[in-house]
Length: 89
Image 1 (cartoon, one colour):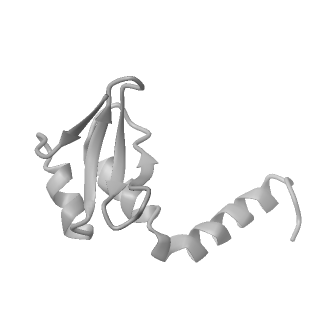
Image 2 (cartoon, helix red, strand yellow):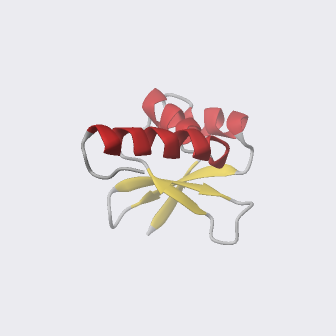
């Protein structure tokens, strides 16, 4: 079952709406995980929060993974893979 989280102790739900008013949080009771969704997408699912609780890390994680940051994230991943010797581009 999915339960919408509209209010939380650290105001994460409200802070995400400041980033984009279409974000909302669901708690997946089967997986015992928080999920971030966006009502502007046909499939609203964006990501699963990698932490057990909602706090500032969640807001930072959502900001980092926004599509606007895609090029920077891909560059960082490529650089990390090169450092680890996973591949050369």
